[in-house]
Length: 540
Image 1: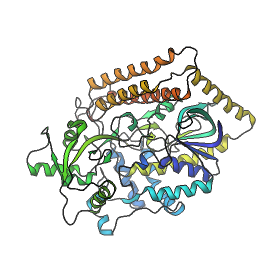
Image 2: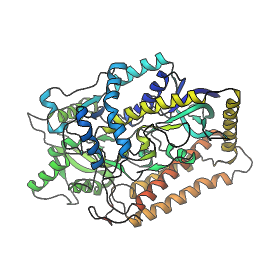
Image 3: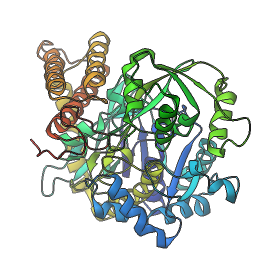
Image 4: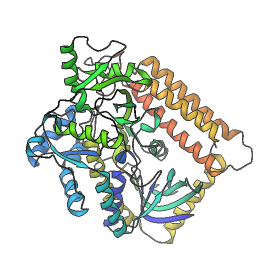
């Protein structure tokens, strides 16, 4: 099977869907491929009620939000990207509501909008707040896809990006793997947009959907892309009992009662209450503030998690808290009085593929958007900006991809180059790439996730990171070894796809560990106990 389109979008979350709609709206023929179902990825993760979306309260609030992002990012965010990002939020919200017809949630009243729980995590003031629910977004996007004639290739996974042999070495398409038919196939495209999600697929516990494979970053690196801020990753508390993978709403920390078997939390009720009140101000872990002890206690509890119960007030609970409690009861049958257990999960990546203000990756014809990218966030990220990032840069990537595709349109010569690139790529994959059977793939994947979970979560030390790099390098050798043993037999596409996926994941894991080891300072979500916070140390 071989497909042709002007713009190929890879990823079925909010960023990819926004990019596909914008590219098609600008006249491009568009295909969207996603490793799972459409409306997947972290955007539609089922472990929470929906997505919060924040932006500046007004045009005059833009400068403050830009400054706040840079401050919370600890100086590692790209100021040009941040400015582009913030100034694109209002137009993107208007696009959602006015053009796509998505009805966004709003605070119940002007009074509840001023509750402290509506201050975004890590922020210092109220912002414009909107909520995106799956039902509303999905209905609107389906209408747009139908009207614009966007082709959807569900359960089709990226294997390789193809480039021309001459001139600019521009992107000419991609090799995909149809997970249902278990076949590799090519797609010719004048532009490609990557929107495949973050790094959660490398960890044992992750608040991301299973179709977030965390392989596209490695594939992009092979095509010539660079990564930025990849050492910064949000880690969040989440339930492990009575349900797994459910986001623990940070606003409820102030009402939580923990059973701390390791006795890391303060013993005095007044001291513990003050600590939990501070911790209620943000969802992800950070070493930048003086409340990291809560996350340390949860982390120390290990796989079984820390026991917690809620003590919500009978009256006057903030809207944000009431919404979360009602959602847990309605969807999961969990009441505030139930005994819960909470553990640390990998959550959103703050870094990824480096892009510019036009979502360009530096590889001609290749664009990226959403959580697969980095630069618009820093060491910590203000809550509600991940979904905004997907919308803003998704629209930018789609628009720019359509323009690039139009510029690249030409005659038979270019089509021959693209077809030849696909043929060579498929031939190379089938003749040289290492296949993996189910057993080996499961073992290597499990070992990789165990290593990353042990050494690349909250506690990151020189010794641990060095050990982890050696482990990943050994797994890379094991993954390559299988190809040298197969002789002249051309393996099945399914085994090749497993090998490419794991090789790409290990490439990203190695890049993350290397960046974590190189940054010898504790900064936001990156905690080095051997280099404590607030003490400057030169980079390695």
